[in-house]
Amino acid sequence: MLDGGFHYRQSAEHRGGVAVAKFKITRRNGEVLEVLVDDTDLDTVLAAGTWRIISQERNAYVARSTRRPDGSRTAEYLHRFLLQPPAGIQVDHVNSNGLDNRRSNLRLATSAENNRNRRLMSSRAGRLKGATYYRRVNKWAAAICVDGRRLRLGYFDTEEGAHEAYCRAAARYFKDFARTS
Image (tube, rainbow, N blue to C red; front, side, top):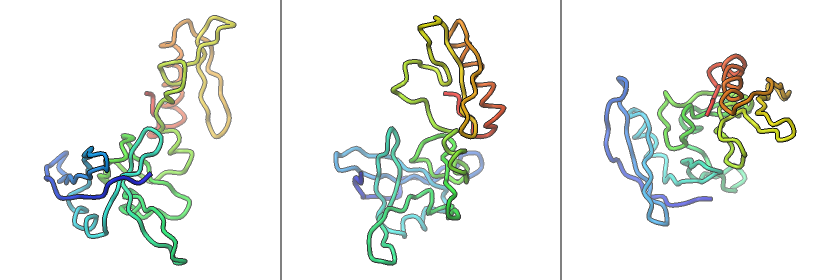
C-alpha cells in the first residue's frame, strides 16, 4: 500500500559518532513519519526521487516507484537502495523499524536470518516469544524453529520459564539475529 510522498530535510545530529539525518514523509491521512538515514546518504536518497511509505503487516517501509526494463512499475525499498544487495539476499533492519535506514541498523541476511529477527506475532495467545500454553498438561511449552525443524525445549510451570528457555536457545542458534521479544 503506497501512501504520501512529500519529503524535506529536517535536521542532522550525531549518534555514536555518526551524523544522522532525518527527513519527513507526510501520509495522505496527514500523519507525518520521520525517516532516519546517515547524513552522508541523505543527498543521494533525496535526489533519487519521491519516497513513499509502504505499510506491511505491523511495520512501515520507505520505497519509491521505479520502472523495470519492460516498462512496468515496481517498488524499490530504501534499505535495498542503500545497500544494493545481490539477488537472493535480503536487508534486515536490526531494530525492526522500517523507517530507520541508518547503515548501522541495516545488515545483509538470508531469508532464514531475516525471519529469526521477527517480532512476536500479535495473534499468539502467549505474550512472551517462544512460550505456548498447553491446557491438556496445564503447562507452558517452549519451542524454537531452527533450519525448518521445530525443536521442543520442554514444559514449564510459568510462561516466563518457557520464554527463558527460548531465549537461551535463540542466543545459541540465531546468535546476532536472535530476537527475544
